[in-house]
Length: 523
Image (cartoon, rainbow, N blue to C red):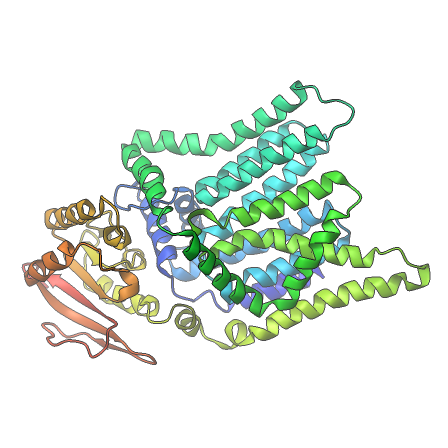
């Protein structure tokens, strides 16, 4: 049964590995590409995310190649391993049938369109070390070995340096360790608490401290601290409680709409989990579910892919429901009926979810999946734009993208003229936005990139009425030093490419990009 699930996942995901990179993937891929060139994060790439995800992408690029297909092949492999990890975690608490059900539930939920499951977002790479850490923590609590506390902490620390949201699982581990000690009715010596807690904390701290040391030696620690601590704090304070609640309801509604019966099984598990015989199991499963939910909450943005961090807990709860139904105390002659009912319930729930998403999973092309998910964002078009630039450039050329499309940097293989690969911080309402615009302008004027790509798409800027307009006014003057080589116009059901030197005119659509080359560079 488990092998069949893995084969189905492989076939489904493999058919979609050609989906173009979206901008988060583009950032991670560019960061990984720079690492392979021995260029540290926060030198030619500024972002508030911790750099563990760049190391993950660098590993994938090394193993599978520097293409978008390779990245999604890496995601496929990680997802298959994560499915197995969910099974083994569930098996520590549940019967074999329930553990397989949990693995199947995770497989279906994690590939779903509402969580952008076919795109290699950081959350997929956070949950693998987190689940591994949860397995090790459970073994440690069973008094297998104190070393497991350290190893569990190390796994949770790895999850954290891939994305800050993973810090919630470090907190969860400490809560579970303390709760286990407090529930020990025979021996509550403080020493029996200090050592497990200390080992867990030390393990969790090592990845972050190691990264900090490496970035300090690379000379970019100041930038690292600014973007991942100071700016990150500003960024997460932008959303009001009302906006956060509205975002959560919107995302939760869409996620449950395509897997309604699976989420019913999740909801049913809550009272079942509370009634389990083992208090340790109740605490472990209940607190894991709570902290998995808390992990999607920082900032109140509730972006679709954040919910991937909730899915292992949801899958475990599906397994709890199946296990409870299958183990109800009944006469022997009806035991098989109960077990059959448990299996049937999860099979119907899984089939229902797959049926509701059959067009997305099995009928759309990778390009259609990108358009269906992201609308007029230029992710499909980025491949052609980058190919044109790559064919007409030298490896030492530099490029600046006036917009938030870092996937183009990755596709071209050219280095950015500025570390500002996203325009969003420059448009936000905070005291440093104008300074950031000035810094980006200075970077571009200093480097004088061979190529510019200007993106006239709102989602690439998220400009508001309070955004400073300096960079727009500057660009109108600076672009006179460049010649337009091409223009990409995105319509509702069509994209038109024009590759003509000196092309003039404007677009008839609000969604367009232009490709420009510095006039004093010979062809």
